[in-house]
Image 1 (cartoon, rainbow, N blue to C red):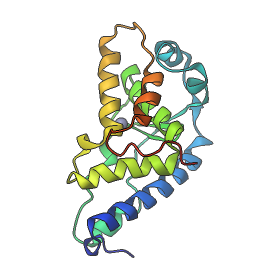
Image 2 (cartoon, helix red, strand yellow; image 1 turned 60 degrees about the vertical axis):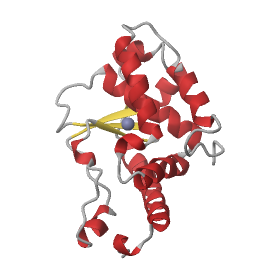
Image 3 (spheres, protein in one colour; image 1 turned 90 degrees about the vertical axis):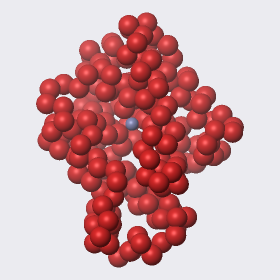
Image 4 (spheres, rainbow, N blue to C red; image 1 turned 135 degrees about the vertical axis):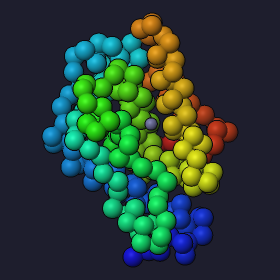
Length: 195
Ligand SMILES: [Zn+2]
């Protein structure tokens, strides 16, 4: 058992990035076998924004609820709660598998919600699961658990906002994601695909 209070910031980043990467991998494997291709209506609505192959290989699953990762228990046992609660999220993406949270989204998810998750599907494709986890966790910890300091999320919310305002008039979100993620000088840009 690791006591998160005994780790310095850099150790905490490494510890969480590694655990998050393994958790994402296992969640993807667990849910992919039960997940379905995106519905035709979703593919039609998002077709101008993402490549057909990307939409084709993505899987989606409605689950009754989303659980937090097992390593959160170590924070609870150390008297802290981990300040990112997935149980209240509308949806979450593990690689190419989108989970929709039935507790938050009783019916079919909006195109906007799926669009946001598709941004993450593309990010995972460029980075691989472990580099995605590292780029998610690092700015989150370094900015005092500020979720909106995570570039992988701010990009997803920016593009989602533009999608909502587009009135169905498409732009290549996928091309933008792929070019932004490798652009030098951006925070935590790294060197691209790691695996
Ligand atoms: Zn997101």
